[in-house]
Image (cartoon, rainbow, N blue to C red):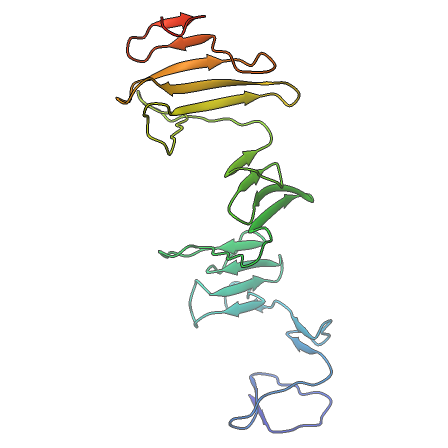
Length: 238
């Protein structure tokens, strides 16, 4: 190999095997004006790294960039030059960014300390999924007004078996006298209609009430009494 130490003024330094370059003890290694090429004699940037093949391992390409212990198959960071794929915790990233690891901590941790979006995923320049400052999640919208705001159609598919809840809605309020839980159906250019789960007392028994909108207010049309199962149309006390 070739060992270089101290200062050199030659225009090039070439080694046919191992080249070790370092400053004297306690000093820094500084490269001034110019470019550095690793595995290339024509660097096109300040630092250019070409991917090379390992002649002793079926001519398999080395990663262009690797941070990790010697011999590890799970480097902290690697770049596959042929594809540009970046791997964190993996030596074989299958996409532009691949992250792998087993830990009790979050695999990805993002901490927004200002007022910008926490996360914004774009599809061909259009926002498809956004997490706003404050935690609201928007799918198909960049301005979610609630914890989850979806613009578009949706589908829920349950599991198998005899008792599978396809969709479960749970309120933060306990059923008690005067407490109403409701689902609101609203058209973009029309009034709203409500489906209410309405408590009739303090025992947790609740009626189901259907209230369409007549243009100015909600009017009860159908009631299913929770305690008896009676159905009332046009009456609140069937």
